[in-house]
Amino acid sequence: MQDLALHLFALLFLAAFLAGFIDSIAGGGGMISIPAMLLAGIPPLETLGTNKLQSLFGSGSATIAYARSGHVDLRGQMPMAATSALGAALGAVLATFVPGDVLKVLLPFLLMAIALYFAFKPNVGDVDRSQRMTSFVFSLTLVPLIGFYDGVFGPGTGSFFMLAFIALAGFGVLKATAHTKFLNFGSNLGAFVVFVFYGVVLWKVGLIMGAGQFAGAQVGSRFAMKNGARIIKPLLVITSIALAIRLLADPAHPIRLWLGL
Image 1 (cartoon, one colour):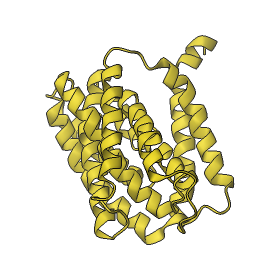
Image 2 (cartoon, rainbow, N blue to C red):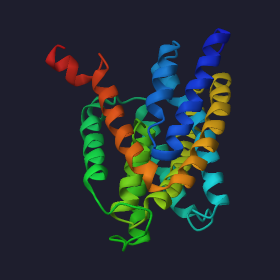
Image 3 (cartoon, helix red, strand yellow):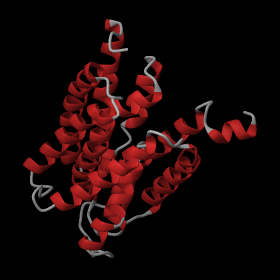
Image 4 (cartoon, rainbow, N blue to C red):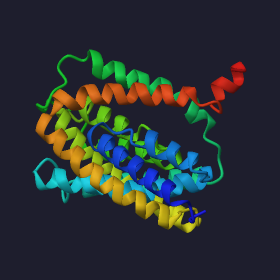
C-alpha cells in the first residue's frame, strides 16, 4: 500500500498542502486529506492512522508560527494540550474496534449549528471577552471530550475547539485559532501513538503528506495573523458548512443508507 504511483503521491502532497492551509485558519483540513487518501485506495483505518501522522506536521507548523508571534503561550497551555492528547488516545482505542456511525449521523448537524453561531453572532472578533468557565474546569471537561472525538473520528475538531474557546473561555477569534492548533497538535499526537501501536500508520504516505501539511500551515497561519477575524470568521462558517455537506453527500453516510438515497 505504501508503493503508490508517483502521481498519487504528488496529488496527496497537494491535498495535504491545501488541508494544512485551511486547517491552520479555520480547521476542517480532514475533509480534504481523509477523502484524498480514501480515493487513493488506502483502507479506512489506515487512513485514520496516517491522517494523524500528517496532521501532526500541519498542527505543529501552525502552532510554531502562532507561538513565535506571541499568540499562544506553549508552556502555559501544556497541561491543556496533555488532556487533549489523553482524550484523543482513548478515542483512538475506541476507533480501532467500534464503528463511528453515531458520530457520522450527528456531526453534520453539529457543524451546521457551529456555522450558524459564527454567522449570526455579531460580536465575535479578535478582542477577548469575559470567560464563562475557569481554565481548570475547561481543561478537565471540554478539552479531553473534544480530544476524544478527534481520536474516534476527527473531522470538525478545530471547529469544536474554536467554538469552546470563544463561547466559554472568552478568547478572541485569532487567539482561539492559535490555541486550537496547539490543542489539535496534542490530540493528533495522542491518537497517533495509539494508531502506531496498532500498526495502522503508512509512514511513507504520512511523511510526504506531512511535508505538504507543514508548508500549507505556514502559509495559512501567516494569512490568518495578517487578516484576523475578518478572514477567520467567514472561512470558519464556510468550512463548517462545506464539511457538513461533504459528509451528507457520502453515499455510505448512515442517513442516506437509512433513507435509501
